[in-house]
Length: 145
Image 1: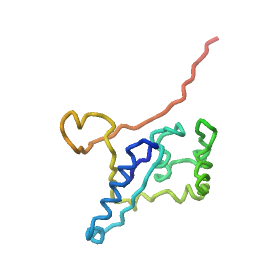
Image 2 (image 1 turned 135 degrees about the vertical axis):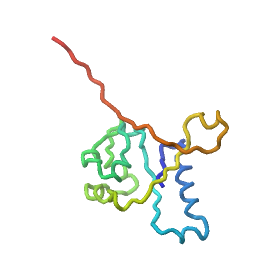
Image 3 (image 1 turned 90 degrees about the vertical axis):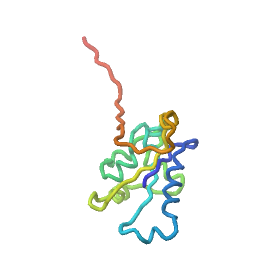
């Protein structure tokens, strides 16, 4: 049950707390036939590092080692940022994050709506049928001589 911690003033923490609340329901967790993990991604929408889906790409095993060298506007790399809280990120750690797709039975993402649609239609909860992906391209121009 991934949640997103998108920033200091984000509602992303609600997703994480909601997932933990679901797991704390008395008597139900022991009835599950499969393990459940709560994962909190940070900066999936390129707020700090200007690159989308860093955490989920690492979990999927598609974040290249070179991704650890992506920098924020201050020049801090993804690899160096966790050092502030005494976490060392190495190539080996990156490889250990990868999930084997055969080990994943299901995926539930709790996410707060970031628009007014549910409120407009008077519905407190919605289930999506699809999502929009993100791509970031660096702009460049051609000069014809």
